[in-house]
Image (cartoon, rainbow, N blue to C red):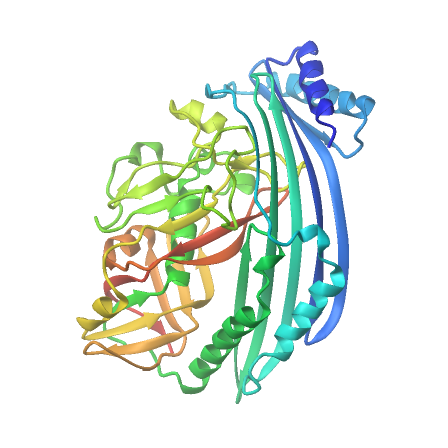
Length: 472
């Protein structure tokens, strides 16, 4: 990347009258392969490169981007951003002011034992075929969709405050949807795994074993599962379910742009209000963290797309609403510093408030300890469906791998138990948290136009008391 173009953009925007200017250059090189019902569908190589310019002028924001990387085109993009800001400034009800942040100068990268650049689309496809052929024969897989992808994303960010940040982050990911038929019943497993590292992530044998186990457990559930108990039970949720709950009912509603009411189509809505900071929303054993700095995690970064240094954030601490996710705009409006939560999925999208790796902090119980004093309960290890309203208040999870617990013993599978609760009721019902942290990769959607970004969801096993289930 020609970093000088970014410097030209910031300098030129200032000459045009911008009170603040930033330029974010990105180059993404990657490839992917798709296997559908065991047959190769599409394999491709992708290269995308461009620059985004964002400015503040008279309290209004202007954004423009271009994939034509020469001085004339970059200056045209600056002029467009300034025109948009000037037009918007006449209509804004509340002027945008960014929080004051320290200028950062840093180059960083994620190391690779086997470079992604050396991986051909043929290797990607062969890995998928090997995984598909290695799945257990006893699984009646009537429909399957596998996609394997690699990318290397280079960024350079600079602004009029003196920040200059360069990064290079490789990612490898695999996504699968499998539809299983058992008699006249069907169930679907949707699985995603990924990390920020090189091709060494691709352990075909390990991935095949993991996917095979998940498919077998799904088939066993629909074949042998019983109905969930009708009376109230204790629930033990596995890391996959714990993680999606942390992401959906703690991460999203704590996004400050939602809380401040930015256009719902872009940011979504939230039941949270700024005045709720410091209020109790869950049991004291529950803490939820968002941390982009976890090495090799799918949502890894060290500086966000506004040049702010990333750090772990306790969203909920011992059941208390502790912090929101901020960019520089929302931080200024709430009178705090940004906590480095501004992300965009490409140069041609505006950076908005986003999660990274959101998880329940581990406690001090083993899984056996969580189970042993449950008289009647359900262990839900994974989900096949989740739903949550736009305000993130009412949530619903349908179990995929689940088992009955009676007198401290795990027994027969439970078919598709339905856990449906409000967010405060969910986190208040938790009475114990396990010690072993587990992760799932995901692509988090938000924005209009939509932006999918890589994240981790996670946590340990957690136990909820006295829950009324549906399903069966």
